[in-house]
Length: 197
Image (cartoon, rainbow, N blue to C red):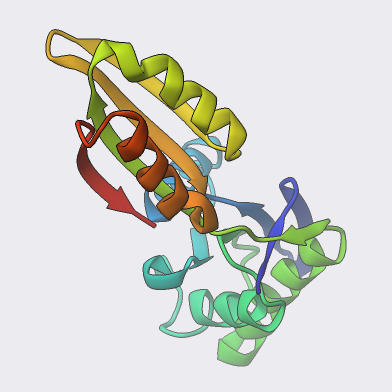
């Protein structure tokens, strides 16, 4: 069992005039992580580097963003792994202060920025989620919504000429129950288009 972060937390470290602004936050996956990193680059156009690490199962990543290989992303990822985090993005925005820190100094700075943020973070139990996508006729939309409410799922419905397209996000432990019950309710007429963890 892993943990996630209740809300984003930042921590700043200044070493030899270089500023390292660390942040940890929960994300749904790599796509959302990349959006956060892109926003940081826009918010900090004067920053020398925006390094990041993502702990998210098969989508995990460690990015040095121009720092010497292995001195930023990987140490940040190790901090997340050490804290048993899942679905968490760590970012560090670095403003260069004019003094080179060397490989060991960089590893310590990036590690400290993330570890410092985690000291103030509220860790919560990470609940694995699954995304389901189904197509049903209009008559089963209400039943699908009631089933979603019962199983702690969020449901978005899009109406089309051929019926209702359902996008469902729910705890992975409830996914098979949702599929089975919606199949029963619709007498097997629900068309399942995709399923992803």
